[in-house]
Image (cartoon, rainbow, N blue to C red; front, side, top):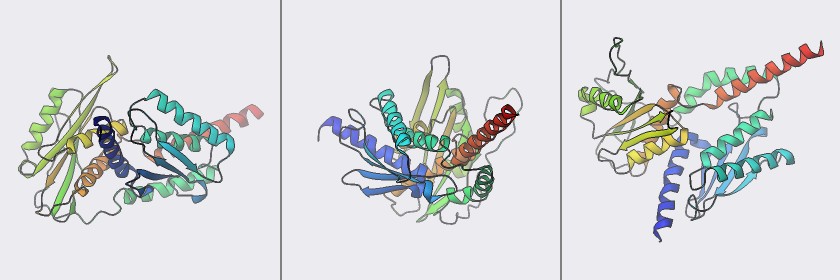
Amino acid sequence: MAAREEENLQKQIDEIEALSSIYGDEWCVIDEAARIFCIRISDPASLSKCSLCLQVILPTEYPAEAPPIYQLNAPWLRREDRLEITNSLEEIYVQCLGESILYQWVEKIREILLEKSCFVDSDSNIKKTTEEVDVNYEDELFAGYQPTPDLSSPPALIFNFTADEELPPISHNEPITDRRSTFQAHLAPVVSTKQVKMVLNKLYENKKIASATHNIYAYRIHCEDKQTFLQDCEDDGETAAGGRLLHLLQILDARNVMVVVSRWYGGILLGPDRFKHINNCARNILVEHHYVNSGEETLKQLGKKKRVKKDSKKQNDH
């Protein structure tokens, strides 16, 4: 296999792992050998009549030299809306030549469908949807996780600081376990590499975290003056885990944040599942602390916009 093809394949693997972590059951592997995948795009209330399936085939030239081959499966989709989606996907590809673009494609399709009011039919539907999401979204995030282990001394990582201290607040989410291995994510807002080092130093003061088999981390800092990103990652002995974690931050466009995932090895090899757990832990804590725009937030925002438009129209009619 040529070097370029190997590089493309590794990028595809990283992207697929990240998408699987982000979309969960909505992401489906149809034929891994043939690089065929499918993502179901729907509203948070799971109205089947408004769901769309994006099927993609990843050629060996993607992402360096060619776009994914795709098909939109949605019998209810109008011709003009289908054309708008197609044009938007092509525009994203042109703007992001050589980059992984599936996440941008999925979210652009979702945005178009929401704007077309496929998912928001009336004010009553908006109310019902947002109420249902408030109740069920947390369960959806943690679906499939086994009960968390009883850690005798879970890290207390939320601190209070005086005004002259630069150490940012550090948060952690609930640990998850699989075959006696335990994973836990920690998050801190950071705007400099100095803060990154301070966060790491503070975490390692906790004996439980310091004793972890691996402490994988990645950070991404937006430099507004140069419109660039300062970013880096660390495997800490878990080969390629740091790069995958950074790739997740890039796909989600998470900014000015650092995520550390601790793993306590339980003596049983997990294979590729370990990367799934690392990404899931990271994704969950990013959502919890609002570094990711979740589906229901987008729905609520569009619902408010729609109500404002209706109110404005009524005033104009009068």
